[in-house]
Length: 293
Image (cartoon, rainbow, N blue to C red):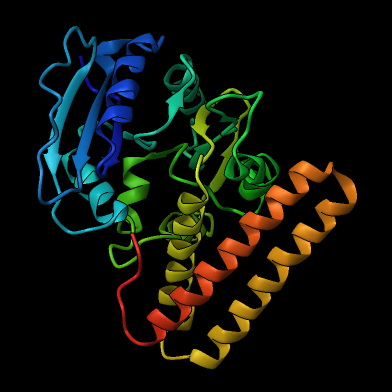
């Protein structure tokens, strides 16, 4: 039977959650003979230890990509894929059991092949919903807004389907980016095709638990923005940074007026840490340092 969907999962030093994801995929309701999973190990110094994975109902292939960054890793997966539809998610995510089935059903109805990207909700889950960390509180109020993002012609790789031909037409992801590569590619695709949001295409995503994780995320985002839009334009980049810092503090102050003291205090602490981290990253970037992973 022909493979119809190739699911591509980049991974960097996240073996435990990857194994949880791979086991969870046994619950997918889509015919197991019609899809494959390609895991791309992006850690050049160690191999993935997943030999203990048994009783998987689908075809699994593991390959390596030594060029650092999730976008070179995804491009490696694209080259290895056999399906005419490509699916993307991340090693820490847990797709809904009907994720692949519902997506494939949508593509079957797309007789004129107008879909450029199919995406859907990315609800967050927490380690302990009754006792959130500061970072989880921040994520609670700033989680994925994939529906409005799709209306802007954008999508994120935690929950993304495209025809393989569309991805190849636009050359895949920009390998020079550590962040914002999904925004860049989806923007190109939406100039010609439709970005569709569908409520039953669901991928669950863990909220970041530590403030350090959030700071790392925003440092990567800043680096991606610099590479895409502000390289050798340091003054304009400083203006972007100043506006970013202002918006974080404005968000924190607004929350102080609308939610309880405990959560608003947590948000302010996280915003302050994010601003400190991005300012530090700004000076590294303009001095020629590589974008943080």
